[in-house]
Length: 121
Image (cartoon, rainbow, N blue to C red; front, top):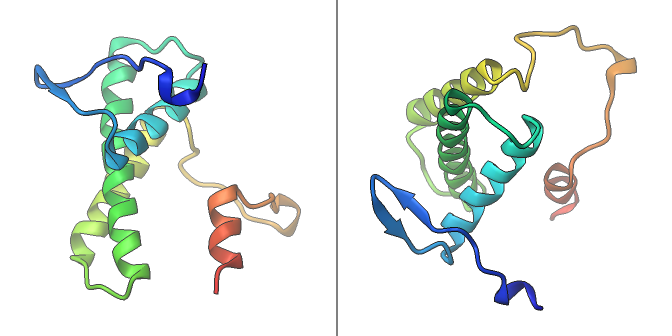
C-alpha cells in the first residue's frame, strides 16, 4: 500500500473537519506526531492539550522563519512571543530543560533541518 493510500485519522478542530492533506495540516501532524513520540505515545489529556498548542506554535514559528528566509518582513514581537510560548509549552511537557550549561563536550550533531539550512546557498 502506498503512503498516499494510508487513511489518516480525521483532524477535527473545534468540531470542524480539517482537510488534512494541505501542507500546513501535514506539518502540524508531523509536529504533533513527534511530540507524541517524545511523551511515549500515551499522553494524558493535559499533555495532549499542551502538545496541540506546541504543534500550533511550532507551525506559526516555521511560517515566520520561512518568510524571513525569503527576505520578507515579519512581526518580530509576535515571532518572539510565539517562540517563547513554544519554549514554555515544551518545558511544561518535560521535553526540554529550563536551562543548561553549554560546553564544547555538549556538542551534538545537527538535526536534518539544521543541516539542510547550513548546507543551502
